[in-house]
Length: 161
Image 1 (cartoon, one colour):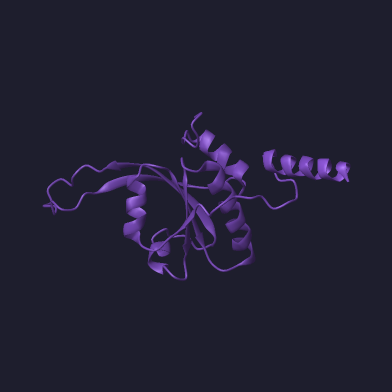
Image 2 (image 1 turned 30 degrees about the horizontal axis):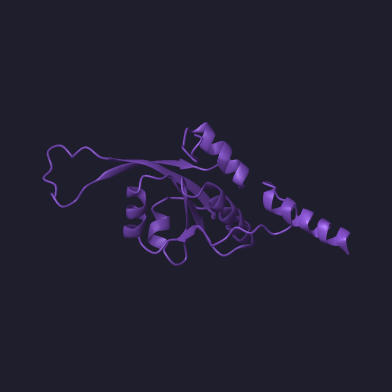
């Protein structure tokens, strides 16, 4: 009986401390993936200054896989990177502006800066325009792929960066 309790304690410790997938579901805690509800909320999220990984999805088997990857990556990179999921059938206007034909796809929005005012035009003083860098994500869709992408593009994803 003592051996079994030692072995079960060992496995519990191994699963909790192992950083990579061991074949058992990980305890990721509460979901860190934000579900898109409006462009206004998205702009407020951008104003926080964190990079945002946006997954534009439709209902498909691959989207189910992508959801699991996003959950894992969101838990790993929280709070330095935000992960947002857009269900394109619910919010077609936001997805159409990205001008992509194949779904799902992922883009990274980062480094929002206030844009220079337009020359020669009278602008509404209540409207502030921003420019945001958008990078298409073309790496392996995994937490490791996101980590490598962030390193390559100099995006801060943890305290050590």
